[in-house]
Length: 439
Image (tube, rainbow, N blue to C red):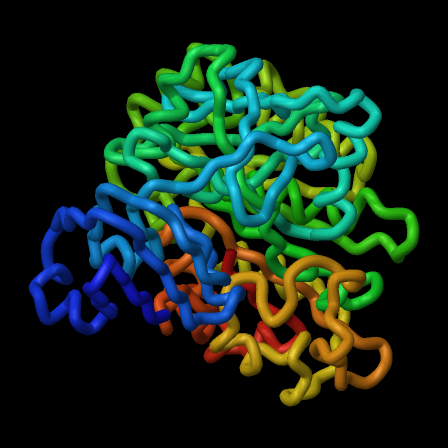
């Protein structure tokens, strides 16, 4: 990704900013006048768009531009004044500008996480609002919206939860120490305005999943939001054969799962080690979600609702210092029970090697209906498709189980499969019938 900054008679490109010493420290650059941002990267190269559109040229007047190149390199974020707009009479979503929504509810989940419910700030009739809110779920298997922090003028992407109340969006948020956007959201009062931009589609699961295949989702912490989206996308459809879906959810504390005093006490007593490390002392077996679980949190209730519609859905909990960890052995046993899949190393949709350099959501964003006319064609024998193994959570969680997502051209790409899954593939070839996607 290459950025060019123009201010009246001054032009600074990314390399020149580095030569001026802006790359190693948090630097404030005051520019008066008009700034033009030219991004020469493709649309798919931006999973974290930060404050600026990274798929088109933008002209905007700014009095202050804050550049933190380390953030740009590692999160693809640029801090700057972000354009906002009032929703038109016809649209509540906008791919390029932020539109206002109203915070109507905040439900605590744990000591650090909560679910926000938002309504669009619009005068459209309820039927039209419902239709527009439903559209991204029809067009995408996985999708997100950017949330703006107006004081610092930065943005972060969040994954909407399925099955929101009529006319609403819901987000699972964890307030991270030092996280500007999550901390901002945790302090907003009801009735506050929250600016959103998008939707932004991610991987097409339908085109990649083998008919009657398996989908296994490794979720760390709030990565469960993407797991709920994925399960909803492939299970709540009646026009495709039902796949076999298993969710493996690793959390630090039981209060993410059960809203009880015992859960809070167990969380406080848990160790400080990273909870995704796949080893610690002997502990009880992982727990299987069942309808009789006591005092479920909102997130657990969402999983139970999905399970009630699809009883074959299995959800396993891995609670730090409370259950056995998500171990290589458990994961290997889960992956072995999968139907065989066809193999073609040239297929852009189903070959793991063809995904190494793919940016988030690429080479296509959305479902089959969003494929361009010259989009990636499946080159596999019938039946096409793979079993899908999705990994979502903190960077350390994803890296530990599937390998890090390297940065290339200013954005993150899939990279090779490493971590625990890489070892399982090298030792026993367990991934032959699977396609691994890192979210």
